[in-house]
Length: 139
Image (cartoon, rainbow, N blue to C red):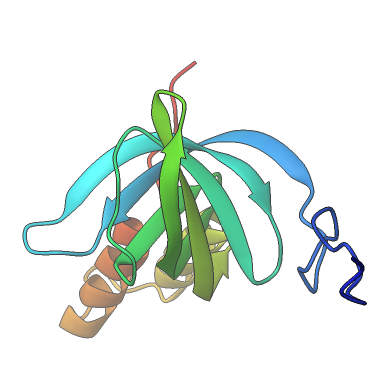
């Protein structure tokens, strides 16, 4: 008996395509104390990404994802087993890109100011930028 409904089992419901990728990342679960782990980005779009991680993360948890020269902030919207790891869906809230360029610009501006010392607010701003730049992998 036909219910009149179309078979949608193979239909993609996402608004944006998610190109497949395989990039290493570092994830920080923003709890107290923060929990860090390494993983991989499986696919990514403007609104979200899917990660492969060695641990399960609670739905709704806030996370920071360090990817190449970017810092991404989001919320876990899906987490389920995937073989020996977990497939974790992240809904993006904020993203900062070009962090190394921003840090270099900040240093350049401070050097051009010609002052031997920086002000307290300049030191604080520089430390925020440095803390935001993901560590470079030594290859």
